[in-house]
Image 1 (cartoon, rainbow, N blue to C red):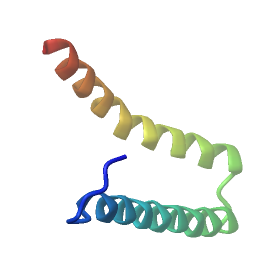
Image 2: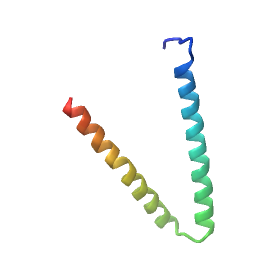
Image 3: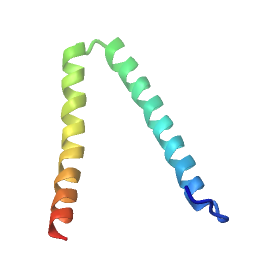
Length: 70
């Protein structure tokens, strides 16, 4: 690992870690509210997986298309 005097890479890593922690905390709050509100656990898991699929599938497709194009 290269040490940078500007700290750009370390700053990016810290910002990324903070974003992941915020998203994780938000997910736990939404999960708690939904499950306490009466949403079935299986239905919640299905919704979570379909939302993840709808976000990640286009990203994976475009990334693979870009990699194989080069």
